[in-house]
Length: 347
Image 1 (cartoon, rainbow, N blue to C red):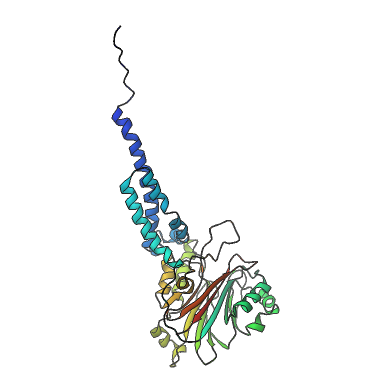
Image 2 (image 1 turned 135 degrees about the vertical axis):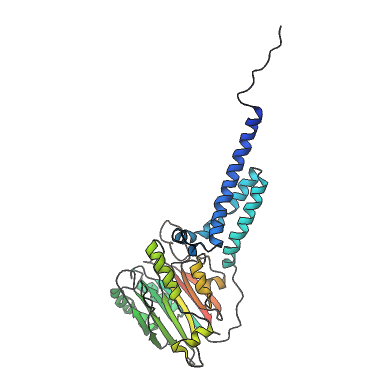
């Protein structure tokens, strides 16, 4: 009986052995590339870059979600035994997490010893937010200043009839149709300042005199969302037009000619998160984000009523010399935004 010889398998054994390894490498490095590209765009200030700025702006608002999922490419690379890919994925993770995690940790507070100012801001969704709840929030928080966005003319009467002016009798309003109106209400006397020029949305400003004579300048902020080429340009321009809070800039302003320089505060719907370089550019002009400083910088303020990603686009930015003693986020029935409250101690 003759010896039988096994038929050779189709293709070489070496090639068969190589294929699984090649595909494991492709899968591992695809994950690293995806997260790495996002990290590169974020850390390179993607919304300021030519060519990619327009599509990058709305996507960058999702960076906290991408950072939360950053273990995925690391785990995949480890499971596939692609050690170099795992190391690079770890570097990517460190970059993304370093940009996001500090918002949940809070920061050092300056040694401010001035009076306390309580600021509340709310986007009203075309003036449809519940009047009773808004007035209740003013009462609960003891707000000294209220910044309102999407304030329609007919909504002013509804909010004031609900008792808003009984708590905050002083006002500087620019109500408009659609989403373009904004307004400021104050517990203390105010003087309306010129609105920011050439903005698509109303951005009224006011100087408020506190008990004891200290003054603050507050701007109701609401640039257009950067969702098209045209609105992206307007969004960048509007953020750049916001007043500078650095002492030398305040001193050089016509309203700041006296020795008692006002402290500047910006409050509203910025249509931007701290992952946007254009918003961080505003911070570079002498501001601190109250929620970020208090460790609440990842609490979402928009998208909480719909099945969509929830993001943090409402902000209270105060002179960086202010201490932040409290930050709260409150649901506001009738609006797709949540109200944001901050208690600030002035320098």
